[in-house]
Length: 234
Image 1 (tube, rainbow, N blue to C red):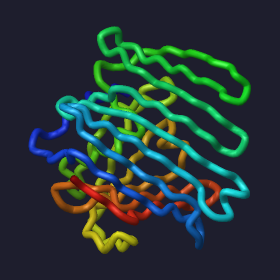
Image 2 (cartoon, rainbow, N blue to C red):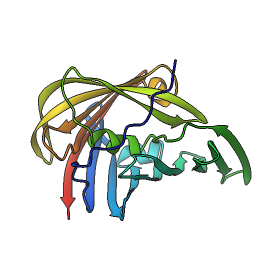
Image 3 (tube, rainbow, N blue to C red):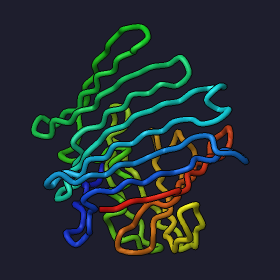
């Protein structure tokens, strides 16, 4: 299947200068983690920092403290790179994914902080891709019209996969931050992280901002739901 071209964000979309989104992540009947997105615009670059930390009893059973960083060009949509540091139980991994568009190459440097080992991989990429963190906000920059799907290339585990965003329906969603009129979107892919994480839905506010107020992932071991707890925009 031909990899689609990454369409640039519409010039009329109002990217926030600075925004903080905090989510309560629920598993079954209790809150298992807290997640935060911090978005900051630096010129034509949208920088995104995300954290995810377990809370309560889950921390004693299986502590998680993950940190993510990505950026993308607000004019083209092209990702500037994706970094993550994962602390999950006894596993501590740091990875940095960089893109060299002129050379058509992506490079992943992964460090095992427990074993002290490092490995590097390279692979080809199209002239412009998004990444799994930037994609959430890249999608929000586009018109979300029920029944009108769109596709884009996503750099994922040293491959480039085609993600289809299915704009399914309008719904009213209640979160700790309030009640929102939303558009429900389901990302799908034939391979990669989107497929491997089961079925995923994102609810964006049905207005010009398209703030992601709820995310749900239906996995083989259960369903987790992230609901917006608070948001601050400057």
